[in-house]
Image (cartoon, rainbow, N blue to C red; front, side, top):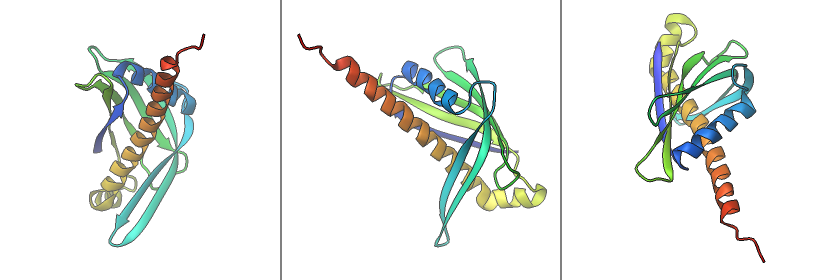
Length: 162
């Protein structure tokens, strides 16, 4: 099994980010059922630009952790057998020191396809593809959460005219 763990900061308080993460997932994968979403990765290797995309069936389940960390269990399987492996892990939202910033992390593991050949590929390039794919997905989640949060902020700061 190979492991991946990536984390990014989001301009949004953790409590609101948790709710918005659930909305993001529910639009793409209703909880406890699978729905096809695209996973993408772009890499520059030895002067070549490589783009990868694979549709996967995403399944998510809510799980609130004790304390201040929100967990959502996630798993995906490729729609068609191919270059992307199945994955199991968690999306975690944690508050940061600043009240309007939190972080979101995707942690989990996958088994590279194609046995020993896949494992060797994973050590050379596949692991980098996995990290890039996870970062791209986290960036999409961050964009959704930040746009929704800023929109709500603007709405709440409007003063009704007399």
